[in-house]
Image (cartoon, rainbow, N blue to C red; front, top):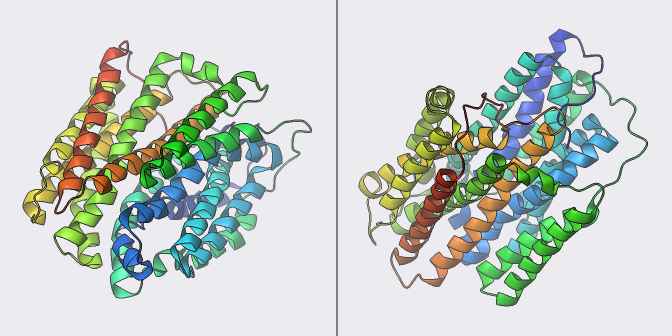
Length: 460
């Protein structure tokens, strides 16, 4: 995926900032939908009489399909046009949101979440490329992508709060319905602010087998983990093995295997998988614990994430200074250490806990770890990139983040459900395994050769 397109005449300066705001709005909605379902899950489960394992598909279905198709979406964007694919992705996201809000049952809701992920896979890389087109100067581009990334991170946080408010005051269906009018506005205004696509390449191939395998493999693994189906797990491993074989032989791979010969980037992406798995598990299980065990309502559970939001934004504001003072690797280790401390606290959750004592300290530790650790690892994953491979690096990092979170959530929720004999036993087990995973991520970073300070890179 080439996130830095060929030079073309820019639109008038007065239209660039409104266009950035418009592109960021859709990314904000896309990010919100990663976390907006969490607080609403108990209400969805009660209406559809769904067990916890099935409910987790409402979360993982979106990120699995989005992460699996993200690199293909970037390639399609390069070949068929950035504005065109942005509008197509936004339209698909809007229709899928409408279907989710009207879903008569859990299978339809999960299918709509799959379609939302496909819309993200088209719209998100297209938006990145459009921003690079609108802001061709390197300094301007870095600032614009930084704004876009910060708004995206804000969407992840707002999702939990919005979920609680809408579920309590209206209905859980509104967490999807609000996307429709906002996305419709994006579709109507984009052609007025964003220049039309120029001539497209006459040649170019899509790695469709690679994209299919990269999506089907994780889906099979998640199904096997959630449903305790060993054959599905074996099938998932075989599909991912076939993906590696296809990428090694095709002339136009989604993921050039040579990319991972750069040890710093390879280690950063591997650590991101483990950290994202822990973070996704924490979001999911904290929501269930606060509502099912402590007895908070949806609105109370949403508001309970306010300290998480505050800690996360404070951590994000400090990351660039920490990287300047400590370097990328040490900053990532600080983030992993904070996440580990939070998970260790949560791994002792009692059967009848209190929010302020048993949840809040661990929640804040995880939030600081997310803000510091993930952003430092994103910087490390973009170490030594050039104009030629920066888009590939960013696409791989986003895909790794989403797929790692989905796979980790499925495995750890499987552990939680499987060991849950009553009370909080399952929660404690899942947080303990997440803690072990974060420790493994830290061990990977410590084993990698030390690198110098990496210039601060945009957050994608």
